[in-house]
Image (tube, rainbow, N blue to C red; front, side, top):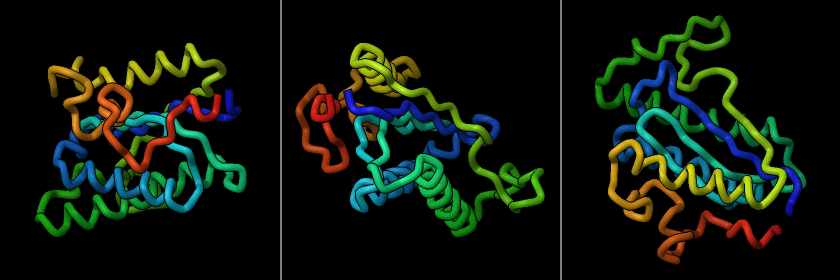
Length: 168
């Protein structure tokens, strides 16, 4: 198995449903797309929920993990801020208590876990894909649009996804 495959979870500040709108989910997709197309990560799986994101990814050799996480988190935060401003939605819920920024959209210290074997990776992938079903957002994992489930279950094309078996 390829070393360094990571399960990553970013949670919206105070579990707010910041990603409830499809255009906000697309901002996250755009961030993942940038990382994939610029050879910074291999993306194995993802789901974008209304208040958090789960990702299975691996940095490509020339990038540091910290840089990948920073790039992933920073772009959506900026774009979400612009989206909220442009739609007259309140930014008050995202005022930062930290001195280094005015607004904060993600909880600090995202969850990360390294996948050490195929069994654990497949368990996480199932967990990711079943998250919208458990939350009552769809009947079947492959019906949820903002997930990699249809790639694995229905063999639908997804230019962002690298099948995890390619690096086993």
